[in-house]
Length: 148
Image (cartoon, rainbow, N blue to C red; front, side, top):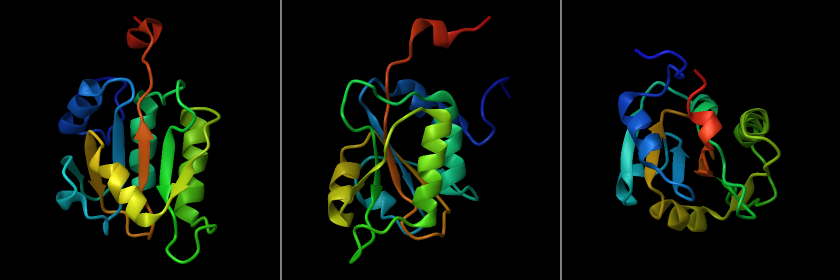
């Protein structure tokens, strides 16, 4: 056990976040997402919702400020302008933890293609449909590393 680390971050997920570099992507996937067939290493987060996992990850990981877009959600099939409640919650978590970043939407198969290039997929047991989020890691500044 360590101090100051969000309790939902497992040792495997902490290692993954530490290994990721600036510009690497991580997928937070819901229970229906095809996590194991897309290619990136899958880290299980059973019993955890996608929104709680987003909160945990963004407690420690900054988002990229050097690109126009840094977070994506999956569009609702047949209604691309819809924004499910889970996605509204994602936006509130991003605003709270990372700042003024908007979450863009991607068509379902485009989201899968983008997820194939991610460094990791965190497979949650989020049962709300469209509870999927991709986050691009930003720069960790030296003054943020150790606050002794």
